[in-house]
Image (cartoon, rainbow, N blue to C red; front, side):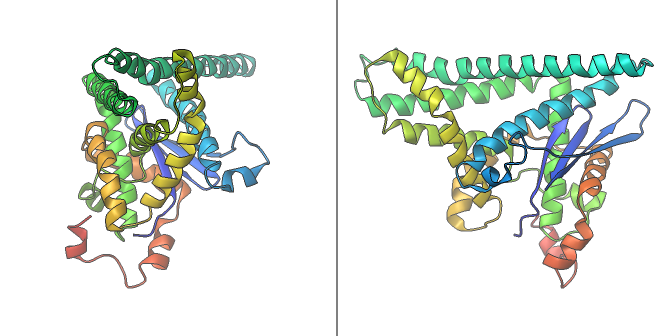
Length: 316
């Protein structure tokens, strides 16, 4: 499988797709039309592009960039759910600045809550068993299991919301489009429909690797101070993100049996974060892909013998 290097994200009633220095967001508006916004992608490191090429370092910036871009595109897509008012240029500028400030606040608050719920809380719960489980290594494993359990419970809980369920359907449409292309099929609704909704390069798999890598790294860090243990867990996050990014980067372009085995936990978790989309959602995802990526040229270069045959199509 040849990676297309396309990344994406589900947004409200739409899909964002990114390829190299361009990204596009396609949204199904209330009137049924598809609105597409294309923009140049600018990394948080600005002109220091060499930083995003250094192994284990680039993953840190990629993670932060994806959070910033994700929040920006979610805010843009949410605008179609609100009643549109005619604003003057000055009013539009004020609204844009207010949105940026609010996005920043939401990101900071979300990050703090994520640290508290998925880092501090699992450590606190596992620490309650220190008298019955004297082994530090066993408690580290228990902490990791608790963290994964909390994450899965969180995903299941929010999936009960109608808006989140539709978001998961668009997430499935995003994956199906990428799988369709990377398995040599023309990007049509029919081909996308039969493609897999799980992909090894997904952010959900990245988070699973983050939790697993975190367990392994903590084996090598030991201190008696409870405060230091919490601080160390937070301080290790950039390193964990960098390692996890390199793993998922390899996984996204390899079909080696070992890689496939290591990818299974993330793919299983994606069964919760992706749902089967309807054809109208697939159309939106296709529009987003075509706004930033020439899939026909990709197929000609990587599948010169022509589109995949029916037997291959059934394996997608």
